[in-house]
Image 1: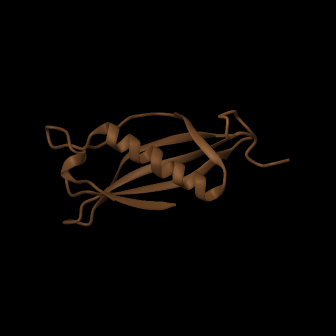
Image 2: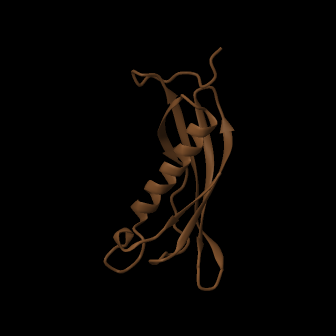
Length: 119
């Protein structure tokens, strides 16, 4: 799954760079959307991100592309490899700025872990 996000002034810190927490929120949200589309009707909650390391800074006006692929399917959990690319609209250059694996667990209405695929 691919999706895009435009970096606007409200996403920036006082130095003019994208807040790391904002990027993490978007990574979590876009990965959750991928899981929800792969498994309609299932309830997923985030249980972890493997690694949080920002490779490049991002400024206002950048268009971010979120490239998300399912990497592991367990009994109650599913993981997605998520890579974020920044596109410079003036030069057309794209570079990877962040990547991580996001893991979700499937829960029932009471919040208890439950198998993703019903037996």
